[in-house]
Image (tube, rainbow, N blue to C red):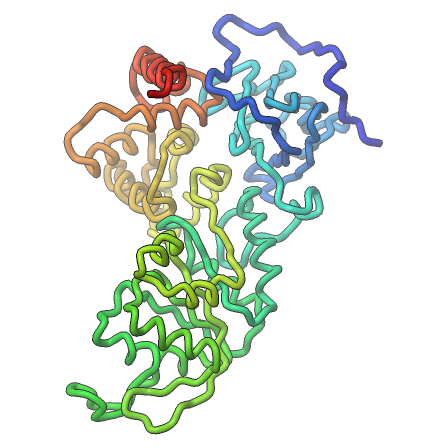
Length: 444
């Protein structure tokens, strides 16, 4: 039986709100929100459980049989909290739980939140996200092989990649720097079941004079310095997949030759008299807006149309904050930082950081902070703050954009934002006031 309640039902919490214990969304969007995916998981139950919350309804989250979204986690109360979908806002209310409801480390009784928020329920985490296309069925999609992340945006990515993998059409991966385009390309190749190898080439690192040799190969004596035959990337990737990373950096003359190979599958090495047929699935990746390069004449329109037969967008880290614990664990393991993983407080601070360099920036920040913490010592918030200051140079005033980002992450809780960023609460309030003034200012 579906036990989701209508919002007309009266609310009876386990305790009354305390002063300063509630949060209020000051900069809320007035637009209606779609159905929401709720995911609850913990280290004891990493696969977790999920449910779709429709507008105008609410669900209870907890460990007991009476909860709508149930997870066998000892630190969850039987009915821990209730999530309301009020069409234009989302509210999470603590129902008198033992271990409370926290946002970025701040204990709250109720909070108005936005999609993308992650809340702590004891040692469990509650992610609130827009579900992948397909609703509840799509939420059960397996994460991509070799790619860390099972948040809603990453499950949507996995669903999209699995849909395009069997095709022979070229794929264009779009995403900010550090979002893991090569890992996703490798997963796409693995799911395609093509028998040949996966070959990755960074077009931005190839000099224009060597680009043709790198892609198509050359014969001995084809040019000065060609002392041996060389198989180019297309021949190496025959019957497999070729990733052209930073494809927007290819010289114009190479774009024309690449287009010809995509159209007829024939590759001619420098110095060769005949072409060789290849069967290569091409994946192009870019962090640049190729449309603007086309408009400026730096990228061919026909090549863009050919490469973008299937487009896959990779979510930035700020849209998948629920993956931070698993990402940090994987990155620390890859860096050999045994015993130096971030503490819970450090993870809560990481949730408030913009991390514009995405996973690459996160990896560098963790490595730097672990040095400051010392071998085998957990990374604490003070180590992260010191690493940030050392990486950014002399201390400057924190920009309003960073403060407002953290304010959004903490469920619009000024006190939690101030604690997370290590700044006075008045600084947070001043940033909010300036944002309000800009919003209210009449247009010139």
